[in-house]
Image 1 (tube, rainbow, N blue to C red):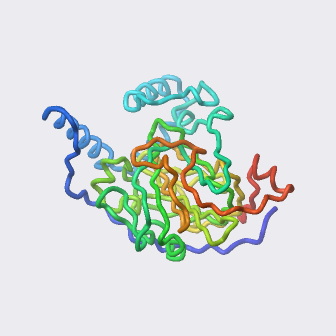
Image 2: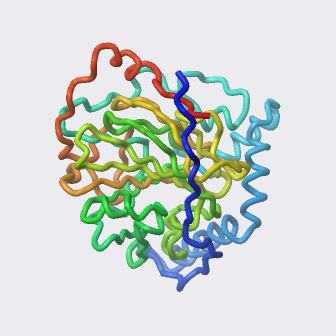
Image 3: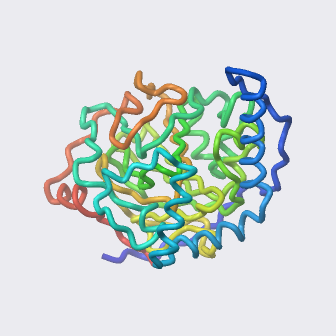
Length: 342
């Protein structure tokens, strides 16, 4: 059903400037001096190769190249991918034969591969990830890595949304290239708009996070503010694009959000999600920053460097929601119920 056309309002995000690497930090690597030297060389090469090339053009090229449905290109690309991602595991994939590398990147999983924690009061992880920086949001400030702060205002480009999250919690979820790239609703909620902020495509791996200030605030991203049953609580997902992966696809929108998107910054929509329902996917690995208002607490499994999967507990403190009417329950569990105002 089509609703009345909603007015489009453009955001005014902070000016995006080219990031400047700050002082390099020597990681604590056990072993001999030669082992430490090799580690530093690998880190520097990784940083240079992914951040000192024309990031926009490299990303556009990879977006085209990864979708080539040529068996030779696919097989050679997969072989190179496995060299850099030896933990790539496709045993849980719904299908085992892929038409392209992109087809593998955005793979779906077998039914039941990610059990969802249905306990009341639990907010679950929206994605398969490595837990990064997390903690309390003090004075509107978060951290991408130790000693590297950024602000809610810069991240969301929405002062009112930032105000509602002050004093709450944040957690950074890093999706490695080998991981499952789709993300799911962490709880029941409604999505009434998507704020799209265009930007750069810096690598978001730990090396870059320790060297580039305010990196998340420079990269292309979407802000998904979930409306919860208890309006005193706020939960927001911020999927952040990165080099080679500047593409975010949402089921609530008909067009992908990527470097070619030229639409409004604020996109109205009307979607209802149930906990565990798929919301969208990245074209490759990247990051999701989860923002939660006051009253939420981390579950014991949320530790720096820990592996977490879709459906596993992330936060506690979600207030009880009223039961979903039977007329809407099927739509929430099996398909999106949304109106496209366009």
